[in-house]
Length: 114
Length: 112
Image (cartoon, rainbow over all chains, first blue to last red; front, top):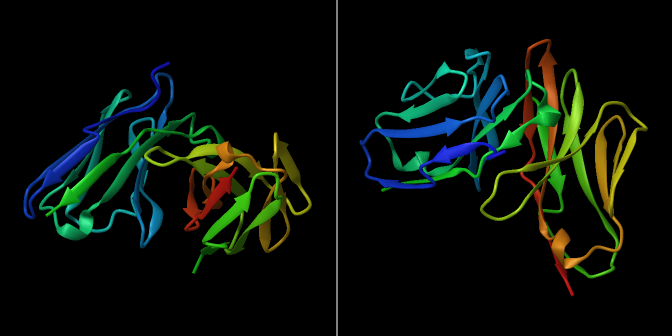
């Protein structure tokens, strides 16, 4: 099993640019989670999907952030326009329905907005 | 406001020197408490779930315990490979609309 796959692993962009992060969950998992991790705020849940439907997006910081899950094997997190304070490591995780104890994290995307 | 506080922020141990990490929480409607291990450059890895006060779980040199207000992760005779950041999280909410709230973590370094 390849585990949760995230791309890119590193992203450096300039303020104002659009950033798209991608995630492929583990095959057979039907819940997907997007997290952000910073030194200041720790690990925060941004949004999660169950059966491709967004269930809770209360952690999405503002309208500049959007997430989609068009099918069971792919999700995107988009930031438009990006700002320096968005710099963080973004993790995607997947699980069965949504069982937190079976949640598997991807390796993360390290985002730096200049 | 739901809050999870971990202490200490960082801990240095000699190999074989047992110690404990603390996770205290103030949440409404706790549904479970989770411990994760995170290695540098990687995502968190699930360790334990505890659901009720008095419950204990063990895995190799780690033992997690839960009271009504806090949880402890006891590390017995640690080895250098136990070095990592240990995250605590509480599950809140109901039915499908529940989520995890994480603490800031404890960075553990074990020296040989």
